[in-house]
Length: 186
Length: 76
Image (cartoon, rainbow over the protein chains, first blue to last red):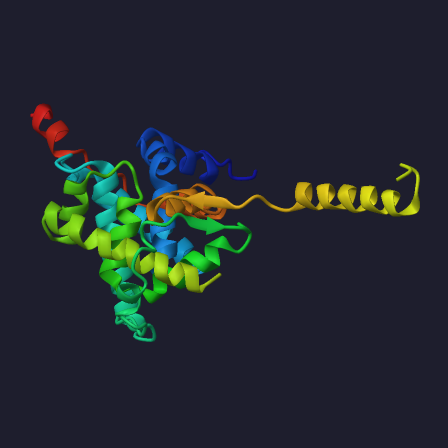
C-alpha cells in the first residue's frame, strides 16, 4: 500500500505561514515602497528584486523584536538602507562618490523652482535613475525618503542620522541638483 | 476667393493634419518638484509578482516566528 501523505502540502503551509502571521498584509502594504527604494538605490531591477526578498525575510525573522517604537515603514526602510549599503560596499564596482560635477547645480540657479517637464514617460525611469546616480548618496537617499508621504521630516532625519533642520537644508540643495541633472538627461 | 479653390482646400487639409498631430502628440507632464516626480515613478513601479512567491516559499521554510515580547509577557 502506498504511503498516505498526512502532512499538510507545502503550498498550503506556505499560505498558512504567510497569512496567519500577518506577514502577507505587511508585504502587501509596504512592498511597493521597499522595492522602489531598493531599485533606485541599487539601480538594477534584478538586484532590487533580490534585495526586496531579502529585506522582507530579515523582517520576518526579526518581527518578534519589533517593538513598534518606530512605524513599520520606517523600520523596513532602515533594514533596506543597511542592506543596500552592504551590497554596494561588497560590490566595490560602484563607487559611492559621485563623479558628477558637484558645482553643476550651483551654476544652474533657479532650476529647482522650475517645474520638471516630461514629454515621454516611457523612458522616465531611466532618466530618473541617471539623475539619481549623478547625485551624492546622501542627496539621493534624502529625495527618495522625502518622496514617501508616509514619512515625516523627523522620521527621515532619524533614518539618515541628522536633525530635521539639516534635512530641510540639504533637501533644498538635493532638489536643485536633481533638477539640474534631470534637465541634462532630456 | 472661392471656397472650393485648390489653395483653399490645401489650407483646410493642412489645418486638419495639424489638428491630428496635436491630438496624437503626448501632452507634456509637469512635476512641481523632484519628490512629486519620484512619487509618480514609484506609483508606476510595482514589485514583480515573483518576489512575493519567492518570499512565501522562504517564509514557509523558516521556523515559526517567536511571539512578540508583549505577548510573551502576558503569557506568564
